[in-house]
Image (cartoon, rainbow, N blue to C red):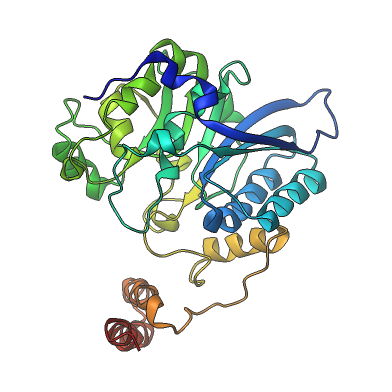
Length: 336
């Protein structure tokens, strides 16, 4: 396990730049909630729809967003500023120094180390917020967060939901978790003071430079190793995974697109359509394509389309999806 000098964990070692945009329209009789995201520049437009979904479903609360990035374009910065000004919320934009994160492994090439920002958020917000809700950028809020925000954590540091039943047991066994319980860290309620009291950030960083084969995922595996089931487990309604396909969504709070099927790529379900509405309300460019875009690099999108159509008994849709999946995959492999 890796060890660090205590000076390594000073805030100045992590934050290169912080900008604050916006102000609350009404400071009286409104509770303020703190919402966190971690994104790279390419994912900021996706996060934009999530921001709007939180705002639209929580108009009785002041919202302070904390957006942790490894860098951002001037265009994305201006859109974030527009969100703050138009919706009377506060957006704190952080550019992080990524050097301290270099010892963390990258499991999948398309992933970024910015996902590990959630291992330092509580440390950076200590003295600013007592608690915060972390939201993955590909999650959409569909109900009030007031109950979650005021929830009693029963002495635990974080509240999370169990991972998908199909992977929970396998992931727990792979990581050799004593509790046998594996959680999804895409939605978290975090007690900031308790996080600091029990030195959770150094415990996370201790897993740097470990062999990549030790892990199945990235930050989520690290968090599970550190907490090993000592968390407050939320009902699934707070993190309905697979884009809402697998659970009763009548009491849902967050819809989370955890797989390859994403609502910004194509539209299949009512939740995909709702995400597009929030995208349209946001300052970012509105997406208009309903079907997957026929480019070689998008062949996986057609496979997801076909799988979904088959699960719903739509055989023509299934055949169409897999036909284009095969054609485009061949084109991609041949670099056509």
